[in-house]
Image (cartoon, rainbow, N blue to C red; front, side):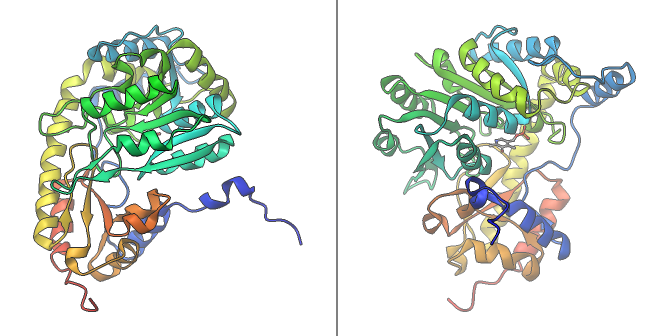
Length: 394
Ligand SMILES: *Cc1c(COP(=O)(O)O)cnc(C)c1O
């Protein structure tokens, strides 16, 4: 017998839930609140800059670290948090946050190292840790018994750190829960990193999509963290251009160089004509992003209201594109099962949170809905969700 073609490292990661649910949504003409991408375009001036760049010949390999005007714009953009980065040595442009995360892990950890992840986690984290040969240790977010907010569990994180722990990966605002980590929570995480001499890699792609007047605190801006943190963000979520795949890493030169060592053999570079357009957007389209945030806050409210009326146990969403809901008040126990049936039953697609975890049994009852959609799409989804009758078998 020939051995299976796929390397064992990747065998747990063959299918993504998004492909499955999107295929189901298409087949049943369901409203797809599963996958998190916006259905409107980013700022017009940014789109025009990209077209101009293509027309003016910015179509060949950009420099390895990214075009200088973009690295400069990224460094300037981070000064709003009081953090300073040298655009030449401390900023690296990547093919989306996805490649930034992959390069950081591949450049910084390997066999024998442990990486601390928080679950539920963005699906690429576990796969990239596996690609690196390191081992993941996973600590769950803890649900506040009063508010239902999912919060980092500092004591559980502390308990999961071993002498082999090299790095922790922190995502705030958090996908899929919509939790925005507080300054106090991040300060406690920073103290753990300093105490155990860990590298922090942060995924801040939703840094501007935060609601109710809350603010984003980059972990790398806290005491003792600048020297040990790689901060990752991306234009996709900020400027409604998820298909452009322009991301970036900021951090101390040695850590950025480690990520760059891996990145140069993954893609080397990408997105030449999009880079000046994102530089322009970072410099000039801040007010557009504030408008996007306000729109998303009201979309969140619209969907939350609809989900509540339909009988879901809605959890607080403080940021991102997503809101999580408990399916048990409707008499269901397994969110995966429900997500498989929902498109056929009522024509709405969602994603079960258990697929983003190592302990699916603890997250079975939670389902994620995306609200980054046109109001009429959300209204249609809500109208359909109202047709969901409580599970008769329970
Ligand atoms: C969308 C997303 C990413 C990927 O960002 P790209 O720039 O599209 O690669 C990474 N992390 C989280 C939490 C996301 O939601």
